[in-house]
Length: 44
Image (cartoon, rainbow, N blue to C red; front, side):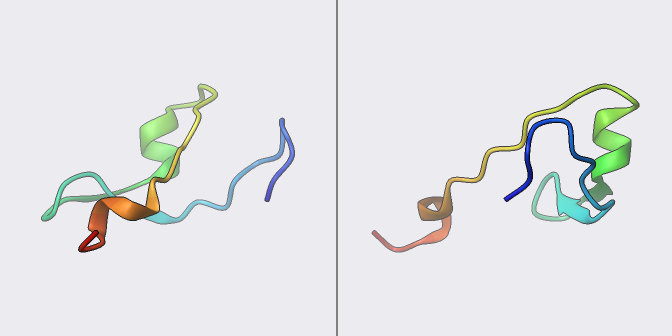
């Protein structure tokens, strides 16, 4: 877990099922908040 203000490594993320981008492209030099909901891809 990163603390507030830390820089995130520039990794690839899925925007849609067929489209990938990087966190830097999403942020465009602005602060962003990334949330992950792990149950979206589960069968439950």
